[in-house]
Length: 239
Ligand SMILES: Nc1ncnc2c1ncn2[C@@H]1O[C@H](COP(=O)(O)OP(=O)(O)OP(=O)(O)O)[C@@H](O)[C@H]1O
Ligand SMILES: [Mg+2]
Figure 1 (cartoon, rainbow, N blue to C red):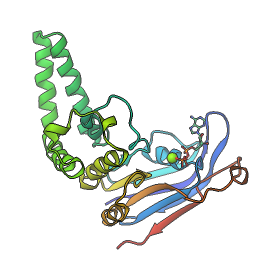
Figure 2: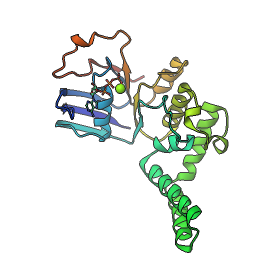
Figure 3: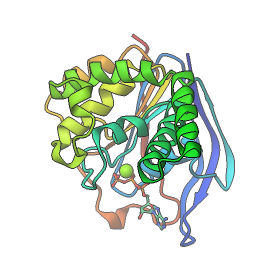
């Protein structure tokens, strides 16, 4: 199981604005927690602090258990990335690293089919197996079948931008909810989705931190510019 502990975190933006000041909360094991605040309050920044992508200026962030993350951009992917790229991006680090090494080795074999490239490709395949990449593909097959109605073998090379926003979200949620991570950080998980109660029901069994905007937004002038912070950290009791 896992938990998230944020203690006295301060964070100043690159342009010098103080965004978070003395922010503390704990997401205990087995709880579903929603982080609620208006646009620009700092919800996504806080998630990036929890994942370690950003470092706080002061205070500490502690996380136990494997960490799965759904970034806010999922749902609005418009680049050339494929379904496989998206599933790799939200996989555990060892699967992610092995997948990227395998892609690079495959490309090298296609470009320069010499002995060194072939040996590197064989090694990348062995590393993929070692990282339990084939098991990840078995899981992804369940996810693409559930979210898109087609097996992974057929779905993997499809451009993510051809999926609807809801299909993008659903695919990543399937992967994270069925995956091994004990703690999930979901940035606006039910945007685009028309089956929100289903998502909520699925979120119950494990610790979760969800980020969402409030529907009724405060006028920006009323939101203090000096040390804005998310307005609310709401915990659901373990069920
Ligand atoms: N690199 C940066 N340089 C300057 N300002 C930044 C930077 N990154 C984020 N910000 C600002 O920090 C504030 C918080 O951004 P953040 O994305 O965390 O908000 P949010 O609460 O997730 O908003 P939303 O509900 O719209 O997703 C915003 O005012 C944003 O413009
Ligand atoms: Mg955000």
